[in-house]
Length: 384
Image (cartoon, rainbow, N blue to C red):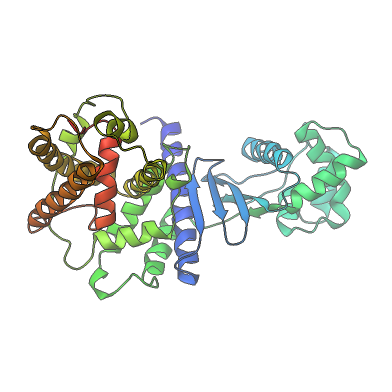
């Protein structure tokens, strides 16, 4: 394997492990905290805290070599953070974090720091990054400002000094942090303090941890929606998947679902209007919200389990729709509701029967009803 590929893989794991530990720590404090975690969204990691009204944008660096202000990773991070800072300069609730298992070290003369500035720090038995980490610039304020102006390629003037000092005040510098192994071991122990944990999960913590790592890494593939962040709900789902009576065989119908072809390109509202006189705007708005909720629920399940569940719902609904509609030219509004109820009842009975031998992603009636609407909306099912 290419060494750079190995570094990238470890870098992603470092981001994932850090975010999961942070999520669990916060959920121990408040198991319903409205906080959203993601990697590779705004940056290596991002945390949106709706309760505190803050957003944290972070760089997580997994390196063996120590950093100085001349290190390209530090320079790039400062430039990256500053670009975000200028976008959110009026928003005092946006913060930044540089987090690494590497340590900081002294710096030599470079394009960014002069020999005199380097000597000034060295004579005080400190270095540039150590001063930044302390949050107390003190007598080094002018030196720090001058070096930052060179890195960011901005003129040294009063306006920029105000910005730079405010910018630096928003950055948390964390060097010498835990390794991948140390983060994992601490997180496995922290899991035992969660309200969802009980004796039945003893020895199974690693299964839950691996599930969460996969979930947060999957979130990096879809950066368009808040529903693809990780929240306390994902912890609930992970524990539920390993609850006492959930050691049944996994139904593997996800391949069949992935091979399904869409039968047309009409959404739920268009399909209903095509076969019935129903034209209730409020009815369709409620349906759209339910479909959105279904997407959110399915985004929090492993793709294979979500696809399997949807395929089993699909195959029952297809049979029920065929039987119900074969002698109908059109539907009344009442018949649309009756069919949807029949789809729910028949599918629930089918899934309950199969749950004697197989496990599925969801047990909720609400998720089932909304999933049926989603399949209709997404063109896998139709009323005719």
